[in-house]
Length: 462
Image (cartoon, rainbow, N blue to C red; front, side, top):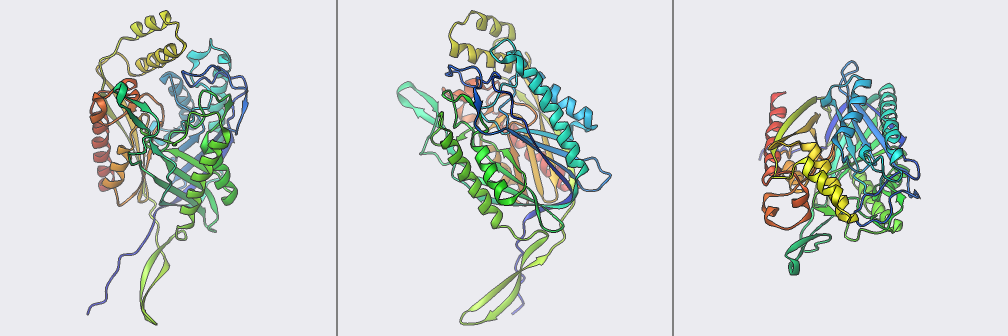
């Protein structure tokens, strides 16, 4: 009988020059931070945990322009002009092409406003100088990461964490959906962990790509907080002695079970739950630059299959693609009509909804479609996919299945934020994500099909 050649077991990896830097971006107490329509408080009165900004610079060769990924403990961009101004300042200062920067928000709902249109609100005068600080801190962090870059290996492994639950809850008596725990629907519990190690196999940084809304802290909260991400990061960094980047996944339909709280212990408990899952996944990884190979059989009390770690060449492929996807828009009131309605509204909650609707209309314009950018990076045999909207988890499930030969990092709220992308089947329902989004039915499916096609082209064109 011929010798069986069993397939080797290996991780998706990348070898290149990688730099890491981390900075504190906690805003001043007193900044405008009303993120909930139901909130009676407008300003932050203290700090639960610091907000952090962590960045990676990645190159396949020393003279090559880097790609830069930034993870910031911030919420979302109400106004696209503010986001574009900050990103342009970073790109110009670092002489980067737009396709080589992904500025990723954790999507905490307990952070400061990032909208300079809120300047006339209590604490709103602090927003503009804060955004300037964030831009300058980012430029400094990226410069430090580049100057300290060293030869390293980025290794990925999938794990699991059951923190995230489905949050589309039917309310039959009112023929609508609530935004909260639906225990009868299965939630995507996939966790993707990245580990960066230097030539001495010392951990330089870790990455946690997980999809779950940071909405533990809500209208009763008066403190600036990264939500569960803060305790997750503290636990992982204590164990690894290296910075940890959180990358928010396609979490449009996912959140913790108990949320909308003012309980900081609950947020920290959730963070430790995710943090221990990250650490467990790290422990399951093989050594850097190695695979697990079948060596043969040993006859003992039982016939034993012997597998051993062996050295492996790690790919250094680095490809960058930035595409635009034209998403159809729903019929919506014009910007002037929304502003007129807002000026006549006296209800605090409705006024907040109209303000957000105004910002969305400003972002997408008055046309029938809106061009949405998507960033696709290939690092070795992994893919990083970033886009600005709040896609449902269906998006990442499809990406992983369609591109299964690669570790696939899928990220929401990257380089902007505008609206939700729910599945077409939900557009007949009365639910927040459907009336919030400016995008027409079928937009999620169009995004999914386009990105899958473009990612395949990138892989096979190299």
